[in-house]
Length: 345
Image (tube, rainbow, N blue to C red; front, side, top):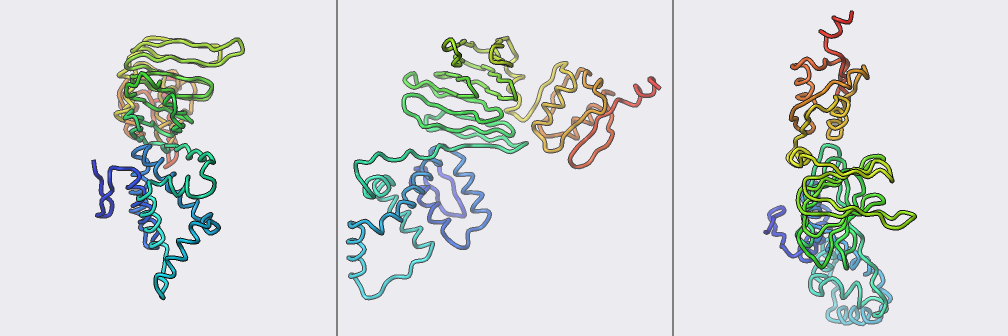
């Protein structure tokens, strides 16, 4: 696939695309639109982020070239080639750097030419992908696995050697894992590790609680404890919950219901209103609150769009489950329905 940015072609090859982006972003006339398109490209594939980090590392290494004898000789040859020195601005420097990186593959200048050729290369920065409240994002990994981040979530792509490791920094993510028996796929979440080979599963972190919902395949969950490693295996259609370090439980669940957030929906089947509100609030900057804690025990069933607070409140009013008290652009207070209040009075 080839995408376009501002009418200019961005190639499939991450290194080539990173070089083009580097050159374009050196100008003084970079528009907000171009920066947004660059951010979308950067987040679209972990390989893009890695290529960008490598290119930046190479460019930062240029400062060391001033004291490099090989580079000094090349510069002298260039200056002796003519009487007039070319004028270099940020854009021309960017284009030169991009061309050089593209020509040598990025690694030669940054890792071999500069400094001691036998010194080990410093590892590239581990890219982190994140979403804000109400956002979701999907990106493809280098092995063709796909990660979908839920609202207010973040995942770090660790360095891959013998295993494909990611760290769920916060929130919730759904992983569709490409099969590779030689390299397990590991998601670290807090003090626990979820390991799979080829499967689809959801991992969610909450304060004091971790849950894993397995849609397809098998996964192993492990944690290091004082007496050694503790582990448990899951099969498709089940959910793992650890509310405390010693409290592990696996139960059968409706995976379609649990994964409805991937399609922008939340499904409830008799859950208490307090729990439903907490879930709706995860996807919205505008928060719901209860004026009467007793109202929180009201059972709620239905399918609601994430982030659609007004539609959710309208449904509660229609079915006589709650009314609206105070409301503004930041908060909506739910109160007991007028009919119930009238009867109590």
